[in-house]
Amino acid sequence: MAKRPKALDLIKSEADLKDHLQPVVCGGDILGYSYVREFHEHYGIDPIVLSAIDVKVTSSSKFCDYRVIPEVNDEEGLVETLSQIGRHLEEQGKVGLVVGSADWNTRVISAHKEELSEWYVVPYIDFDLLDAITQKETFYGICEELGIAYPKTWYLDCADQESTLDTSAFPYPLIAKPSNSATYDLLQFHGKKKIYEIETPEELARVYDVVRHSGYQHKLIVQDFVPGEDDAIRSLTTFSDAEGNLCAVSGGRVVLQDHSPLALGNPVCILGERVDRIIRDAAKFLKHVGYHGFANFDIKYDSRDGSYRFFEVNTRPGKNTFYMSLGGLPFIKPLVEDWVLGRQLPYQEAYKPFVYTVIPSSVVEKTVKDEALRSRVLAMYKDGQAASPEGYEPDSFMHKFWAGVSFYRQPSKFKKYVWDTGGKQADVD
Image 1 (cartoon, rainbow, N blue to C red):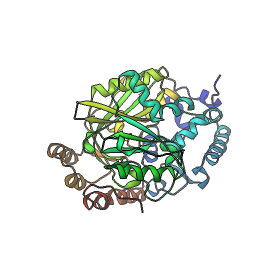
Image 2 (image 1 turned 30 degrees about the vertical axis):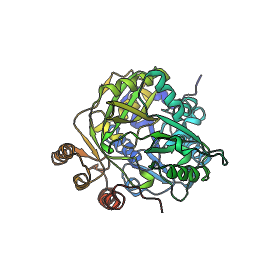
Image 3 (image 1 turned 180 degrees about the vertical axis):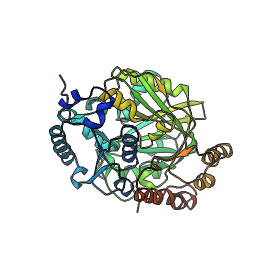
Image 4 (image 1 turned 120 degrees about the vertical axis):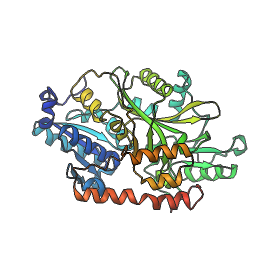
């Protein structure tokens, strides 16, 4: 039988949460702050936030206990820190709820789920399943089996330093990206990008050579480039119960992505949009693998055949999951009600009109090419339907200051990486 925190027995109803539940958030980024905001706003609970660095926009919040601990930046240090906190919580008659804001710490938490479950509710799937479906080759194999559209894909072995590559065998343009993003994210090397846009055989040869000599030992994925601007991308966030049944869903059309090299692909503006086909495909995938908890799917509309092609599943809420809250369902509600309170969840959709945004309207006005989409989104800014998780009115003056710094530096980022480059990617310095 799996371990279960003793203090969990003290939580009989929502009224017991404030006295006996202690969320512990690993990471101080925008998802980390979203957890802080949501736990305070809906349960009156201030999470502990663990980070190796001081992320001012979150550390300045008055609604969390922000701890800068350099050791949590590696697996051993994170597990030891969580264990120490867990023992202390047990002495206080509290149960922890541990969540991660990045792929790598989610993997660590899942890998150590059994030992951490002595003190924490660990709302993640078991590591074997997590490890399998986050490998793109396995993910696409499941999509093939279930009839879910995905881009044509090839896999290049980066562990073999001596292999040669016939670059003439591929159609161009292409997209290249690591199959194991959690491992790749920890590497530092010149020219590193989250995603590589490849126009020529020479460019593919160069990228393959750079990545496999960086210390990355997994597969490099090379994919058919699905045409379309940022606004062809769709984001879907799901929550499913212990039997893999879809219980909560929200999603939208990406209006703009971050175009800086190390954050390329992270949506910075999303318009709420319901697409029945991708909801059905996601539900089919979740049920098939027996997925429990939050998942986030990256999808792109293919104008060539009208399909929606699934690119990957993230085994945690995405950084922009606050859009579920904007859509009408506070995103921590299903998490707490299922994993902590043990309730059976009704099916819920969160598609009230929203624009999730971390950029000023001026960036949308100058960057979005589709006139109808641009006008629609700008009208929602004007009507107060555009919001950022960091715009939490009750929080401290210093939080508002740092949130403003982050928000209003976005035009300079778009100038550097989009407007001044004609849309071409810039290398990491």
